[in-house]
Length: 263
Image (cartoon, rainbow, N blue to C red; front, side):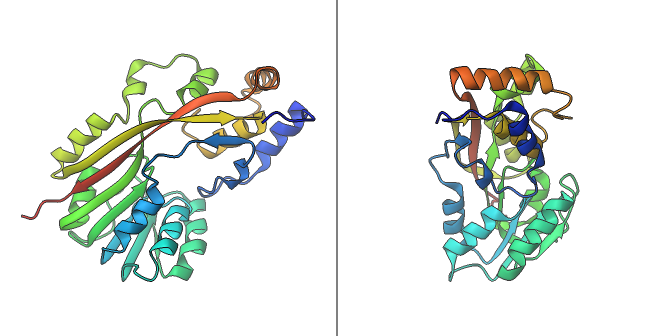
């Protein structure tokens, strides 16, 4: 929505640069940026899966917000055992504060390390937006007949914003995270893909402060992003938003439902 009193560029940038970025709570963006949600409503769908499970692992929980929401919805039919992993130290602390009252331990484990659990320990593994799905490890910790149920970031997500700051990107970077490639990798690791759905979703940034906060929070979008390093591009984008309205981009998401066969 247009601002009745346009705020100064420096004020907006300073605000976006000062907001804490730990966790995956995006409530700060209310009224400043929007993103359409996938039709499958992952947190709610995860809650349904939790009610039928006995031992659950969430990989790369972030700040624990999605798992916390799913457990709230699933109560009182929550699984007896729920564990989460997270690799980024600020998020480990955030997730621990949120999930410990629910009896969920958060295990500090680097995203690229083997999962610190025994073979076949879980009948359900969930994840929302893992950096990279480690298919062999997911398969290993799943019990026979167990399920991997996850929402992944898809290819070319928010590329309009990335290319605004970095210029045209090579085609291979657009192919990264393609659902068909991930399906092949999952099957190569021994999983059967039961369902795989993909959607492209509209995003809008209503002010430059929201852009700054987003790029600080989702650090892999524009690697090494700083306000100082991109001040000229930020100012140009601020002027564009003020004259033309919200900056529009598109996120891509896909839903994985995969099963480890009974052997």
